[in-house]
Image (cartoon, rainbow, N blue to C red; front, side, top):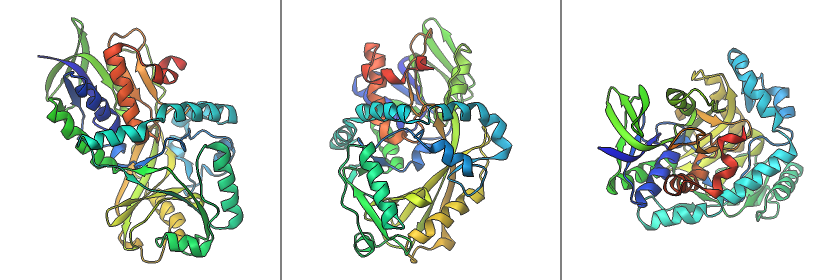
Length: 411
């Protein structure tokens, strides 16, 4: 039996595509070498904003990074062992760290992300995912001057609504989870939060209910083109699909090489670290601890703390020093009730980074019925519903105007 569409990757991107494709009446088969949400999707921050969204490559990133990128405590770190392998990407990355590229990327993202929150509400109305939570985004700093400068930068870059500056007493009243170093801040409104692991699991269930299949684990050894179909082979079996979507994050370039060596995907692993900690109460906001360079999101009776960007070639090694650096930087900004001696779920994962900070979404030139949906950098959860819609348009109609800025041909 031949399936209409095969999707490799059971993360937020692949499952969002499967969701919309099965809604369109197509038969879908999803493949993953591990399980649903086994990669970076599960540990995404889950923060959704249609307006405060931009590429990582901003003005000043290179200057800031060069001063500290060889320090293990730096928010941007190049591991000495991976420095040579990272060099080509870092040069290309640096070329986009300017105001013109940042503004262009930001405007593209804002236009593309429009309607994301409505799409998630529609999924929730249909019972396909848990309903996202409306929640404010609290920027936290250690002085009035720093908070004022950050708020000014935020307002100049993004079309968002913020609160006035908030002083220490009011800040701690609004957010009891904060600690002594947190003295000033401001709120950005219009954000929502979704648990990324639950999003993927629920969406996978809905895909199966509509007749889709999820094969995980499924190790892929070969992908060939035979009689107008893609044949996917591995020790777990063989499947035939008419159209194929590669949505496997940092694994996508290797998958493309199984099919064609005419194209190289400029997707590079940028390692992120996270952990969870209990004991200090529940956060009432999404928190951006700006000087610590970490984000804090709620996770049941604990908080999820994530941050840093580490370039280490393609080595998946876990660096405990990076987690220790996150704890050292975040701890002063959070109250003394958090039990830092019993942190849990220490994690490292590779985000699929691109030189210009934009994803790659579109058909592969010269390859019939082959679509790339990857390279979402740190914005996979935020862009997942819209990417799913784009993939569905590409499969059904052969074209998707919204994702044209993300085509592979731009490189």
